[in-house]
Amino acid sequence: MIPFGDPSWYQHWRSPYYNDSHKRFRAVMREFVEKEIIPFCFDWDENKVYPKGVVKKLGDLNLLAAAVSPKIPVRLPYRVNLE
Image 1 (cartoon, rainbow, N blue to C red):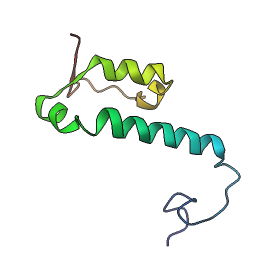
Image 2: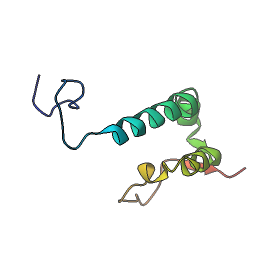
Image 3: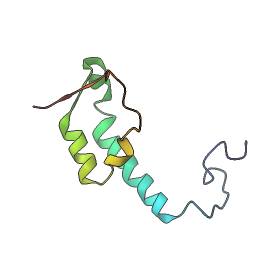
């Protein structure tokens, strides 16, 4: 194992920075991704479009900031379906 190469909980190390709020966040994010993204990601990738509702659901769960990028590309590879 490489120190700090994997998350500390995989290596059973204790960290003063990783706590229960991180575990809760990870569980909520994993549930959202498995339910709302994974079943549809192939179609979204093929069509180069994803539904607006996914962004709204992320916002409703207060997870939208996790999807915001500090660098916005000039031309976005995906478009949002506003229907």
